[in-house]
Length: 452
Image 1: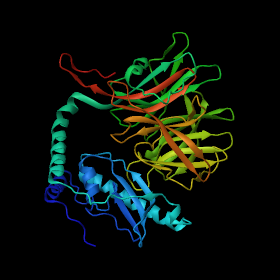
Image 2: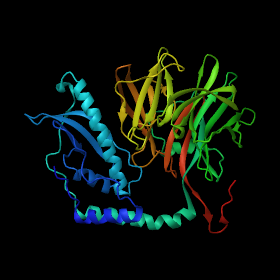
Image 3: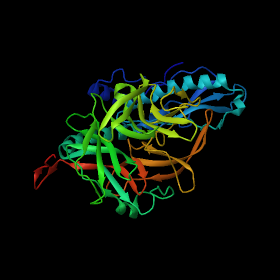
Image 4: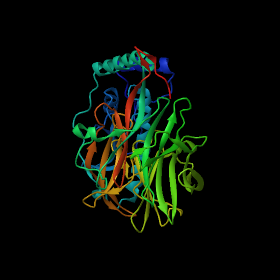
């Protein structure tokens, strides 16, 4: 089968990208081959031009792999994904990311088709009737956006530190729980108090812990810009001044990146599972002397790229939620679940893995919790616009060793003046979040900002 040719304007742009960035082997222009009756839909269309168009418009591509009846043409869904595109203004890289996911989805689809008792049990899919059309204007506009951003980025890098994360909290007289039907934006933004930070590093992924005597501890990722390697830091809440300590203390530092310090208690000990995907592991640490001394207790998994691992115990079974990548792409858009009788035991993969393949609601954003209606809520990151752009609260409606379903109950956007919100945790009367902002490197009246 002949590969579709790029339109002339897009062909010219891909040559420019290859020359600028050396992406000569970045991606083939055609789709991934699949044997009939399995076919691939791009935003509901059968032709690959629909994928090109989505990427050139900087949209999240919706990829579906379906079974197509050779007799009636009826289509049944086998696998799908809303693919995370980290670098939206790079067409070839985005296309490579998308086609890598297509290959993974086709393989999943084949396995699910072989395992299906009947294709009639699979969801029905109605494709778009007309083939997608890609105009020269769409390609030209993408090229202009890319070049414009490239020109503007150089001076902006001197003036602004983008993606600077800070911590914020609020207190309540009653136990804190998200009002999942409301938004974190608007008037509610006045309730958040930003914790003091430093210009030399960002702070993110806050996790609260309340001790047996009622004292509060905050653990979080601290990432110095000069190393670009995260460590786990700690501050305590001062009950006398009713304020958080201002100077963080690093309590866990490795030769690889650490973040997302998930905490839990078991049999009288406190444990931490920080993100260690840079080491291709999921590691568990025990507090030898809480809160400052932590020792490696167990390596849960090896040779995996897993992010934001979070445990949940329902009284009988331990569940592990984590975002993994198996195609070398982003780990923003897929959620896998494992289960065990013990947090220290062997973990069994859920048969539906990944249970979510959607950059808008896959990656974990904090502890699971029960809301005021006794619903089990999973905070998730919305990474469609960019990494950590907003939060989605998902109610888990079914969780067994063979089934999993959830639904959205609320979406929370960052408070005004911020560009991201990707962690939410609440314990007792305190709720903590992290917020993405832009840090000015240069003040025209004072010169370069002093780094603390």
